[in-house]
Picture (cartoon, rainbow, N blue to C red):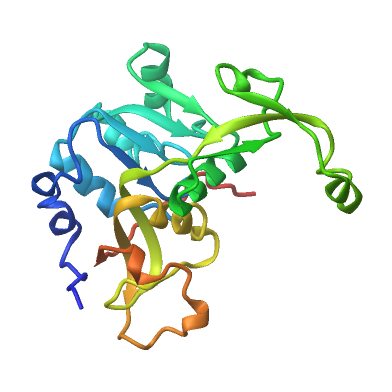
Length: 249
């Protein structure tokens, strides 16, 4: 079995330029929702590689001084494919100044595009965004249900317009999990199980940052969320786990 556990985040990315996994203009998926379940140490290690022109696929762009905000500070991200970016002033400034390209997606569409990429599905049709700016420049079709489909669920299978969306597949996926065994079988915890499981399957090379390492066979097979066959490297880190918005009475 290949050795997947590395000593630190920097070691996980140290040879990826040489291997051709990361390069100027590469596409990187980064898990997380807000600051929950982000691979924070791997993001910093990616920053330190100096790779530029990144197309970053992530639900959002972190905050000014944490998460993907660190890559925006250094202007290493050329394009963001996201669904929400409202907490990052650096993002806002670079977008308004024309320094950052942005492709907005409805959140469910973004999740399905990633899942489709991991499943080898090149494109799919969705009713979400039909007739709005989301559909501009994309193929649309009015689809007719079969009699059986119409009978089963009239609300979903009815004549209406659908938008074609493409699956997304990346050069590199950086994900955050709760536990891993030596083979890279991953378990996520609570809300950190957001975009991470889908992204782990949708890249040519996947690195997982985890809170705990356990022995081979210690994880209940029924509780594994990402099989280790999708994971190339694993690193255990001590996360800061910042609070994005603190609300008090």
